[in-house]
Length: 462
Image (cartoon, rainbow, N blue to C red; front, side, top):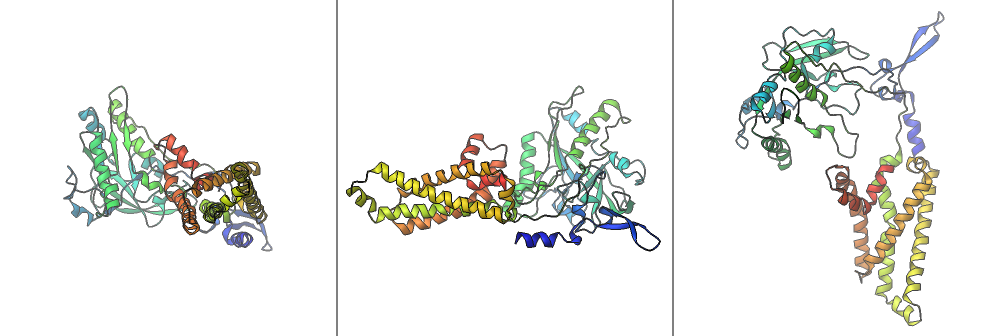
């Protein structure tokens, strides 16, 4: 199956596109060139990018239908009425606090530099570095293409006030091909709040609580700034931003977050506050690292995932548990004691039998996985895999010995054993994994959870 997949995705339509750039007099091609500019959407991911394009640092904006407004459940100060959602004209709201209110409000008033002349996209990087561009489209997991510049999307310019007839369509020479770009204005609204706890409460109620309770559309703020102890000698800030845009589901690659523009906005405002309007701290562009050409690959073992392999290994647990409970139910252990077999040799023989069975099972598992070329087995060091399997099968046998003491019926033990196999795998894949990946989760609990979840131990190797 892996071979069939490799042959199918290795066809020319899934490799970097090429074109003849030098044709001889007889019509033959003397030089072929491959690259993004000759590729279709299906081919472009495999092309080399020796010099990644530069893109403006864009601000992440909430979608028009989710921008913060004043509602009956959240009658927040300074927010517009919900009617602006009908015309898609709601401003992007930023919450501001700090120990020095006058200084914080003065700085927040300079977060959105006003346009003093018509937009000139000839040098679009320089033009957009002097203002605040934004987009409601989430970023991708790489910076080779900025989604805000793709056809059909709108690039917003955040302004203190939007003038009429601002909307326009411009041509931008960004990347290998010219782009047609829709440009529009959105008002940036800075709102003072008394403390960081108030901002936390409004952000939670407006976004997370609304989405999780099913209480209607989210009431989302663009960002928040806490100026802490900022003064004329130092800039001390804390920034709130919506990290859910990284799409951290544990299934797909995490997307980038548009934090650089948030930092630059306040840095630029602070330098203007200190040195006057002529001083600037510009963030001209962001770019990805160079990329070599690659082949489109689909590893079947990665597609199956850690959960599938977890279930395969854990299927021995109900077998061991059922065997032990059967001996107890049929009084076989008592009969062996009547014939002179002591407890020590009995447990040693039983353990050795199950260890040999588990070891043979794992040897066949690794052997067949390697023979069919599954990447999980071929890319990981075999000595590491042996140590991992040795530790786990001992743990699994010990757990079965312990669990057998709680059952006297084979049927109940069998049902509970299989429930444990499937339940523990699902818990590890869809619940415990997120605790392990959360840096705020206590380290002691992390070690405990990781030790008892085979799926989490498989995850780094798949």
